Image (cartoon, rainbow, N blue to C red):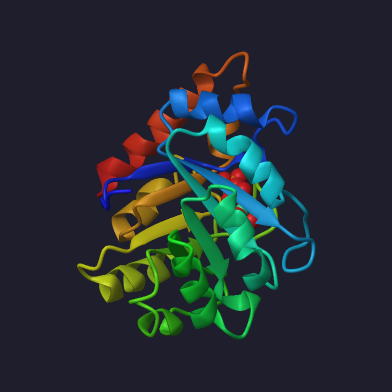
Length: 229
Ligand code: DX5
Ligand code: ZN
């Protein structure tokens, strides 16, 4: 994984056909997705349940590029090795998921994977200052985690701008997760984000048997974001 600040579109398979993950992953990559975003939920840290490590391992062979695993689970530490073994390239944990985020990020780095730090909309960026040497990605949640298809929270754009200033020249991605559309992508791209997660806005109108809309949606989001940088 070579570092670049170019805009990357990361479709979330939370909006995919749950009976068809392998084909959906192949379809979004063929249609121009840069990363594949996998939303792991535990029904405890967030009010929804999704994928275990076995599902991640099963879809891994269907992804050529980056598998971006977003852990919305608490505790995190007991499951890091399992998601690393399942083939994640990036493993992101929430600051709010436990008392020892420094230890968690260390544990992720120890697996050889890229370490991501996710921040809920109500969380400030002070902690990031003390973790800059520990993270490869900071994920700014622009919805409250748990569900796809929610409305973008505009107050987070200023957070992205401040984060971008703190990161400076360091090779740390800024990822945006939640409510990314053609309308909101330019706002966060202009503020300094480079990885745009999008679920409903990528999968809308398409299917495995008719994947062309995925491509049109990805190109539209990318074009809107790039025009704002
Ligand atoms: C929210 C997830 C997001 C979500 C994005 O808890 O982390 O990745 O699926 O979905 P949209 O793009 O529909 O807001
Ligand atoms: Zn996510």
